[in-house]
Amino acid sequence: GAGVSQSPRYKVAKRGQDVALRCDPISGHVSLFWYQQALGQGPEFLTYFQNEAQLDKSGLPSDRFFAERPEGSVSTLKIQRTQQEDSAVYLCASSLVQGNTEAFFGQGTRLTVV
Amino acid sequence: QKEVEQDPGPLSVPEGAIVSLNCTYSNSAFQYFMWYRQYSRKGPELLMYTYSSGNKEDGRFTAQVDKSSKYISLFIRDSQPSDSATYLCAIYPGSGSARQLTFGSGTQLTVLP
Image 1 (tube, one colour):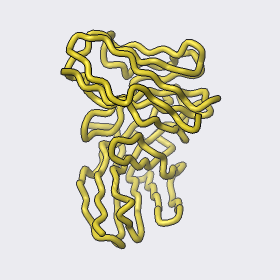
Image 2 (cartoon, one colour):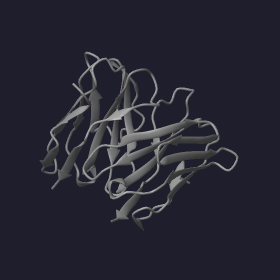
Image 3 (cartoon, rainbow over the protein chains, first blue to last red):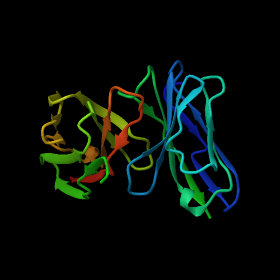
């Protein structure tokens, strides 16, 4: 596609529910990142993939968060047993090569946990 | 201390004004300095990036980095209502194992017609 595509755009989950957020990066992009953006804040790093390998998951806030990119293209961020503090916009970014000097972001998934 | 501190704003200016947006950072190892623009309910969009110290100009936008004082700035000349957005500074190490961007908290800019 022309850009990074994320779905769904909006998700409302009841506390305790599991959610799955999808990211379709730009075709051929090696690097894929997930960020979490709370209201009025800048994005904060969650995890990084190079092709299918998850090279850095140091930003995942708890073991309820899990990400995968099994074939090196589409990625899914899963949050188990959602809590109210998980409410945020989840952004996916991809870049052509290793590193992040020219990363392209998707529009994000706005998650609201009620 | 956060790795990147950004003047929080919000900032409201009349059309045609010169806008100055500023960030400071704490780790001298960072080598790449970016500015992203984020419209409401959209993802961040890269405006420009600078490697090491110096200035970089792109149309009405100028990015400036002073590594000695760990200070980065974005200047917008002849500001337009379409420039109204949140501006995020970001830093990137450029070497080592870390590959992610570290963002400031953003400055919301409104340009009044």
